[in-house]
Image 1 (cartoon, rainbow, N blue to C red):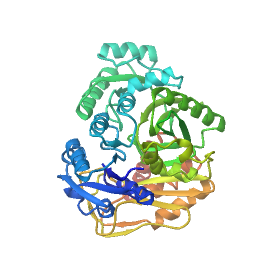
Image 2 (image 1 turned 90 degrees about the vertical axis):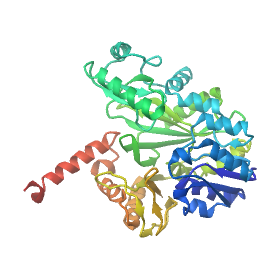
Image 3 (image 1 turned 180 degrees about the horizontal axis):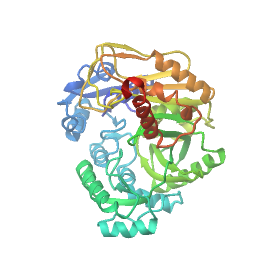
Image 4 (image 1 turned 180 degrees about the vertical axis):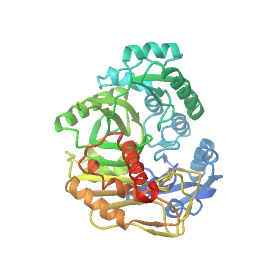
Length: 460
């Protein structure tokens, strides 16, 4: 087992890794920017090193600074968490060259899965179902028009090196295609330094389903069931749950078996998530793979009892899956996660500032992952996620009741949060019945706006 691990991240995920390491008897090193000097991940790590100014590019994304901190602290390994450097193949290569274990897949596999079109082809070769689309990058509008006619409208243009919804445009006709092509190209080039695009068939109103996988360094791969991630706004997830109401035991087994075969072939290692779209006929289509721990990993932990972060560390230390996991991982109950963001619940504008009161809910089946506290400060430089509220129940009905209770007991003062929005969603009849897709939030927000307009005081 490792002697000391540096966590190349911040906030709740950094604290989550620190907690796992503490339970495993592994010492930890936190890195932090000047804006995070008083953060809990800095307070609870065994050591902490400042790596630069608040801007991420000058600190958390500064590879030389992170590696220097690791060398100064004399660590054995680096855990990248999610976001930031977690899917940066170059960073993983630098770790390897520095004789520091990167707790994640090999850089070659990260690079393969990070290039969306190459990932599509790898999955296609392994007979994982993929959406109809272009054979590779589409360099011109003219070629885009040719592919759109082959695929059939509507189509979606995607950035080859993209993520988070950037560099994506939906074209429903040939008239729309040129403008959307140029807009997606420009956005991708600005966001990722690479404006190359490819095309897929666009599925109207799909569900977003993802499968959690674990793979050791000895050629063994397993899946830990699926998560439902359809409640999202602008491709950013708001609520996740496990299992999905739409995935049958037969489909779960078939996809799991196919993914294990595919990931064994490409030499995948450590934790990862394979994401799919599901159409109205419950057919799944591969869209991408995230080669890291996910924000929503706690819902999988809740229904399986498997600590995914500890599993990541043990895999990186060379252990086999059969030593890490029980002989049979069974699914138990239902779990739901709400992402609590520091943003206005109606305007969706970021809300930075000092937290004046902070009370987290508790009780049976309730978990809160956060690095915030009363009198703590939310800086304006980073992602708006400040906490994850996770509940587990015997079934979805109990989990929903537990989440509503917990949301009502979650108190944050001094800044705006998304808690009121989550409470509204849990009152929606369609959501409660499990009748939703990735277009749910768009319809929900439009309905809310229309209802507000019709109020007598607003109508006047």
